Length: 158
Image (cartoon, rainbow, N blue to C red; front, side, top):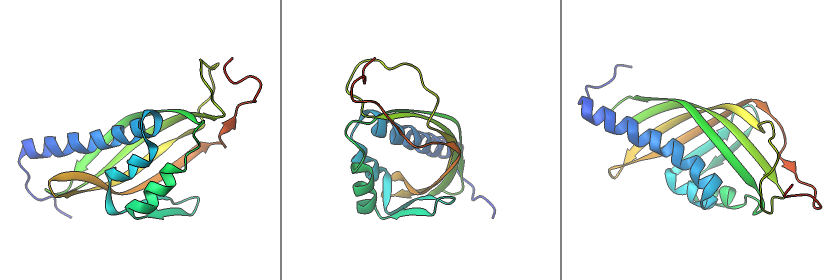
């Protein structure tokens, strides 16, 4: 497939908009309202884990999924190596690497350092809809991962 000719400034703006979506996604999960992550997807958006057989389709299903995150979960995600490729004025793809630190049962305070719960990458597809860039599909690949640790009830803020 040959890329259509795109003005360099339009390409740069599209790349930046897609990079911002990638970072906003993890900010909303870690520091904001997790259910609002669904607003970053197209109405028919998809999030899937090819190696786990999980697939969530549609903005409302995504809202329910992200909104079901445990209220006592503490997480921080590091996003790196973000590479956006603009295919046309309305389509783009990206690959980005993630490292997730996560525990459940968090109350407050500072915790001792931990190993990451997950290390992997996302493969994203974006569409420009009504002048705004949105995720149309995200696939998650986790070659390194573990279940989320639950902190003991007696010593959560050591």
